[in-house]
Image (cartoon, rainbow, N blue to C red; front, side, top):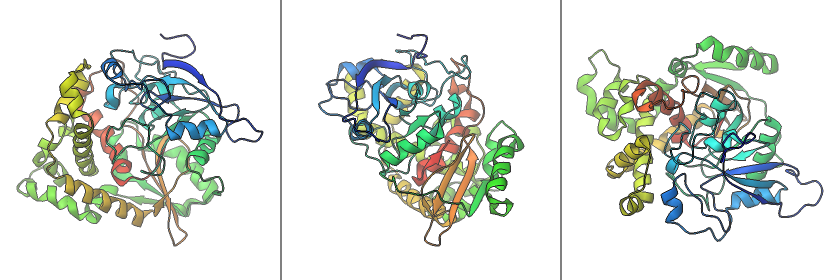
Length: 418
């Protein structure tokens, strides 16, 4: 039940004190809440759906990520509301309500970690990017595989990561040093900050508005010579040869008024959710693969449960789950190849991915053996958060653009800071 102070963010309230409390622990006096898909001893992770909670048992251990925060001196204060089965970006839940966005109360908080973003007291654990952007806080999606996902219900494990939020970038950094086990990493000066010019038309906010303050800050801190520009879609198309698998299917449409990626989308439409039909950006090709892989792995993880239990799901979630259950393993090997090639392509552009920069836009960051340290700047979301009760399936352009922006980090496995 919502209270005045928690914005409807919490599923369950409880106190897990620090494992120990010697002086000098990095997270002493900080509190956090976890998304309702993490194992907490003696609680059932509800996965955003009452039928899931009803048909699953209490956890017999605690997720290693939560234990690491407790060991570092933090206190866990409960679990938070999330989108059903983690299968939405809106932040609405027909069973448990929609956490109120503390920045714009008539707008959605973003998902699937809706309650985690709203409930930030000092820091919260959960997925990031869209909720962080909508709620005006800091968030990070760490590189794939660098933080344990044990004790976390999977959505699509080849894409999943454990992220966290904070209002204060200093706390975001402290939590990162604990979870990444990197307390001795020093600040690194970027050698180049690359602005992905073709990604900004995906946002309804003008390019100058999005980039002005960041460019000004970069010039002040590091000088204007570090700023570079890139047409990221063209770069990816050139450096990821396995995309030919999709491009060749639609070569007959190349002479039409649509661009080649849109033709590829048309040919691969059976692999896509319908909302991608009107999105025209080159970077949507990785989104094609991301959507396919997410659906396929969701089916592998939860398809039998869905068919056996027939859970009560919200209309949009039910549609997405139904489409996932119809997905086959066709082209999955190509998906894996594209992911490897995309990671290599971004490594060549930036390096081996690390982290650390401020909000407003997203950043993919890296350094390589040449002592280069690159930062890629892209929009976080296509625009302000949608109003509550908006059917995003009717806003094909918005949802498609949002997923195209997410697919860059999602498919490459690199970190992203909001």
